[in-house]
Length: 301
Image (cartoon, rainbow, N blue to C red; front, side, top):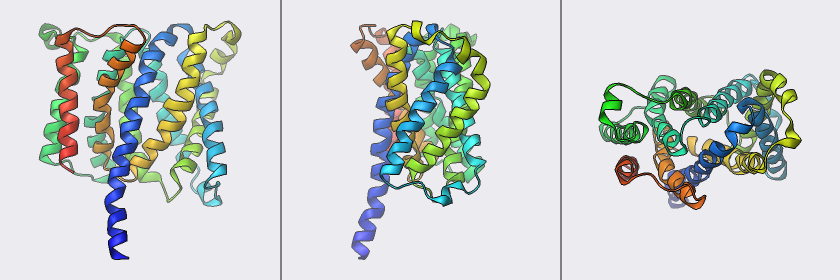
């Protein structure tokens, strides 16, 4: 019995890491597809529909598996709080993608672990070790290298694009969301907790974006918008929300978000598959640093 319990305890972090590996790959697709769809539709309107579709999918999964217990309705204020924070992240992401390249926004995303480490300490008193801090510094340096296009003069002058600035504030919201999940979860299964957050997020976004939703000519939108909407609803929302919820219950916040360091690499692969080319080799140096940061964090385990 003891051996089995010990084995299961050891497996939990491994499952958390596997969940975040899948998370990083799925999230990367939303950057490449989102940059193609962003010019054609208001970000808040698009994400309102996205949250609705994702809620239907996750709700169906919840009913088919764990069910939705009455206990999930305790402290219902948790869901609008989490849903509103994540809605801010997605709206600002698509707003940023209107002007920022997909690889650059993915690099901004890799700054999230640093912010998540701070938020994790404030909300959960999770301590960042010296090795973890070094890894975060390496990953942050790689992100800045990509964001400023390997231009030292641009870095010193803080010449950063408008899209990257907008998305940075979205990433702040994402970093706060991660430890809040662990803080506010009261034993609900990840799929049930995700469903509550998605429903609340849809209601918050719909109330905010109602004029834009009515003004959008949905029938006239190009196919790329619908392709992106389906992808982000199924793969980059429903699936990744569950993966993120699961991982945050098994790993520290900083390590959960450490997997965002893989996002630029995945985005480069997506961009190549979509025929958008790859960044110059000098830019790839920064991407390599983000991968090194991830390996440093994993080695600490």
